[in-house]
Image (cartoon, rainbow, N blue to C red; front, side, top):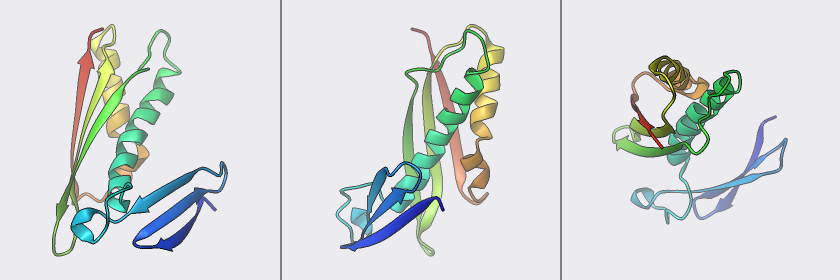
Length: 136
């Protein structure tokens, strides 16, 4: 089992990660009867994409000498559609420390683009994934 989730009322849930005991609370968004005081379930989907991209890139750099993405950040924008209400697009912009060569950056972009969450998202959801390599 991965998680235990409890509906706590008022359109909120608490998810407990079984292995670690860490908690995530969700709330319905303000445009769907919620207070928007926590990540919504659809926000969590989008956040999962960005964190998976960074995590898999981090795994890759651990096997590459002299390469680091420490300090990388991600900006995530969710786009919703109606009828049926669903996530229609996810924009992710990653800001990463520039690497010494373009080949390394290309490898890391391929890793990010092919992370498990990206490969699990339905193809009807448009993904706009951007990489900004910033010199320090």
